[in-house]
Image (tube, rainbow, N blue to C red):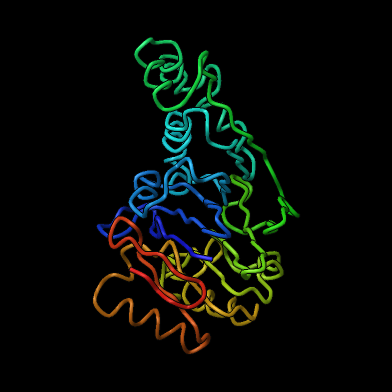
Length: 294
């Protein structure tokens, strides 16, 4: 079970991180959680082709979590040569509506895919990739979901729970993956809340957004929508998770002394922290058995 950190930053771009996206490599399959800025590029940078990703889960629809979605969808469809499995996409409303606006029959990118289907040169390229004619239009299995058991197979089970972020304007979800390899929770952007606590209880790994030191978060008045350092640490401790991974950290913790303060503050409450940057910087992945690979 390996976690590929494609994006671990905030909406504000920084030179070493921007936006949010994670890919969990589990039992030979690839599960993507969120699809923030440049996720498709960074996916290839860590050595994974878009056609290898068969599942995508959105925590919510802020642009730093979904803006590369059309690029990922169209790249995966265009490069597949009809050989890729049907992509399954899950997320809170408006995931279905949003997808249709992008690649539906009259969507923003419909002139692109229609040209690729109908132009003789594009048909030839498609056939050279192993595809057949007439070429099928982009088709994905997209579902609006809420809390509950989302997907189960012989290798793993995925459960979701409501997160606390910017409701009612956007709905947010956290996800838990349980498998024989272990359990991991993608909490997304959330303030401390009972539903996410219950989801994360006794998990092996908790991946959660933490953009600010606690005092800065409270001074800014953002404690109702997202976790700070102390809130994150307390959640990990209360939920009895074995390992904590911070995402959505941005440039705040990159300045000299700031990262050390964040880690030190968390360590006073919680003992096992992995701090990540994203694939735009040093192409990290985390072996969830304990090793860190750069």
